[in-house]
Length: 254
Image 1 (tube, rainbow, N blue to C red):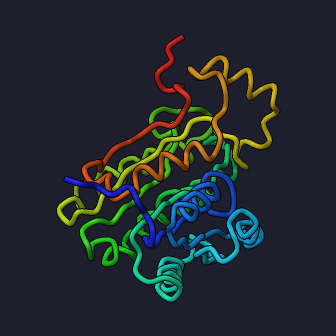
Image 2: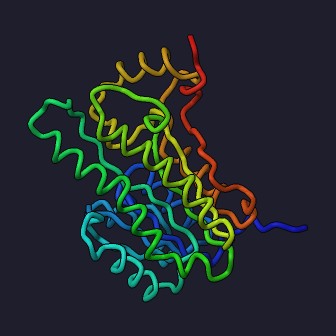
């Protein structure tokens, strides 16, 4: 049995592509021959992608607010017009608002966090379902977090949403498995992204030495390569997997 490790001519949608792990994933998939629809609410961040890929690369930008009810249909329509039917979805968009339960803004933070981190993932998958199932080889990768495996205060909306992404992944893996669509989840640990940019380098170094086996923060590209592995045609028997890319954070006990 010969299994392909090529994504040449596959069509991928990557959300959160304006920065961080989403951006690194979009660039990597383009470099591997996929046609990529890059989605983000940050239009300027999306434009910067053109500086990271060769001229003429199959890259189409969609500036969209994933919390809008028409966003999934708009994104899928743009993909069809640019490249055709969708083979791969990478749900990398995410937000985090450190907030305590008694804070005045807790309810708003909860609603927005779930709208971006969970609802948008489910709705985009649903909007692409016919495409993903058409050849029995669709690929979905949802980005959660090590917060989806544990908890840190005061981050209840974020932590709860990432647990929900893990549950969504498992449920859809079972539901869509008979059609050949795989649904997997990445749980990044401490990664150098915009979400962690405000943390001082010395504090990152202390945290990494204390908490991770590799004693460092990871880079977005290291997450992107794990995502690439999961969207390969050859990864046809891996579904419902919850994979940590955390430098060993989740296995350290001392």
